[in-house]
Length: 176
Image (cartoon, rainbow, N blue to C red; front, side, top):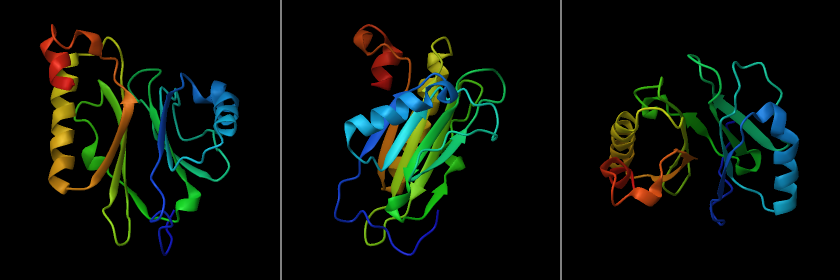
């Protein structure tokens, strides 16, 4: 997790997001996909992990996995695989988690980049029937916090927002 230097200075940071609907059941499909893509992602965001505690076996070679599981109802949950070859320090940014964790699952980390801007990586999952107004409010608050820090940010997730109706739905337009 912690190292002396960060070896990504000469490469572009790459991320991938997948809504996996049970990482325990779909881990082999995930690893097969990663092999077929033949690209090493620096961060892989996972939504709907469906994990319910920290007792799991969902490791992928050369990646460290961190996650936040849903405590108040089944399903949901988010996770993040970070490439071990980055040799970067990272820290959990729990202060960026969504206020209403009963509605939205979220996980944020900050990667320290020596001689560069730090990178904030966020993974967010909003269930389809959860309150969109509360989600957009919380989403805007998180974006405001990150913007004030003037850091590079990669935000990925499964938001369950119909972007096609942004012109007729004020909340969708605000989210977009």
